[in-house]
Image (tube, rainbow, N blue to C red):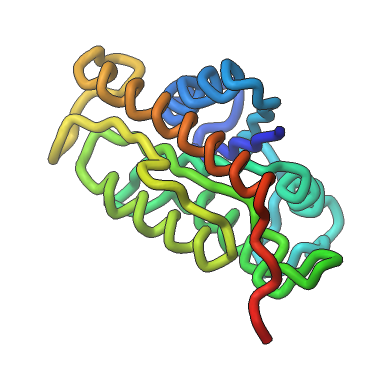
Length: 202
């Protein structure tokens, strides 16, 4: 079983990413459960704006990401919170994924069917639940199954404050929730593999 983690931080590599650090807790549990995990930092890729799976211009990296999505049973979309909302990078990724709404497999199922998704959020201000809801809702629209409690987040409440990587408070809860998220994603992905959803009725 394969998982793809797309980190939608605004920080290009090799800058430290709080979002990456928390996502790695989920990655660790997925790998412990036997899942093959690949992590992408979307800002490192030349992803053109648009709503197509095909290349939008020369050098557009999205078709390669799209291929990875179709090879993965599990997707984790990770985003920082900015102004109480998902990052602009996360929005661009979701806009490109919008094309998957009209893509079907050989059995006429939407290509996101029988795949599961979850969300990781970091930030030093409130808004994590809003970000989780926006991203989870978009992924469900596309066709992903969202297991119960398939998310984790870290923040220290309203107003500015320290970053995840610089603060120990709250980490234990975020890590426990992240491990539970990984277990729930793996369990539901395996259940769908054993008894997949069929094509929607015409």
